[in-house]
Length: 215
Image (cartoon, rainbow, N blue to C red; front, top):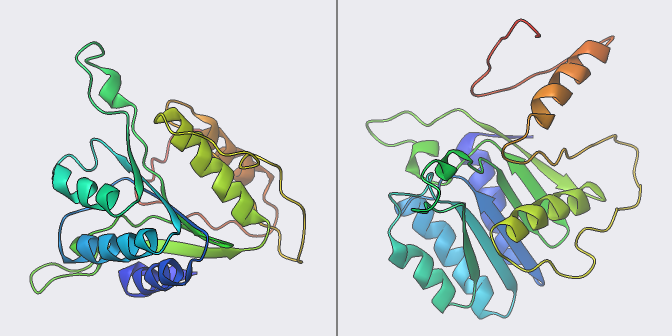
């Protein structure tokens, strides 16, 4: 478990720097500030080194991030796609958003609540936002890769052979990566199911918890 930007960001950047084969980065907000440019530089370095780098950002979340930010990544050899950009023929289509914050570097994965920007590290006039992340290793990372592939395909990207394969089982820690998707209530219902069957311990962390009657 990694707490806030002070623990998550160094771990993410170290994993990117160590990647030898592939990096899949999916985030709702990536800002063109010191933190965002630090990540862009790390991703571009790996792309130039021949590592497969794919970046998926959300149109609304990154609406203030200039196009040149993404073009610089593309020029370095990274594949960059925008999730659900605004279209005149679908004026309400922008409501469907991708709020995921995931990173996979070879056989190491991260699932977090953090976007990428100075707000998560803090500034002299702003306290850092409080968010938690988790580092994963083992078969669960394949679940994370499959989740990314679904979003990548929905954004128009090509899914590579074997990316959606079911992983094996290993280790002695039970971990499940739930592949929720925009415009579905699957995770919301699953959340309540888990709460309903808990018998000893239930930990719930949520930046925007909505305590409905069902909860």
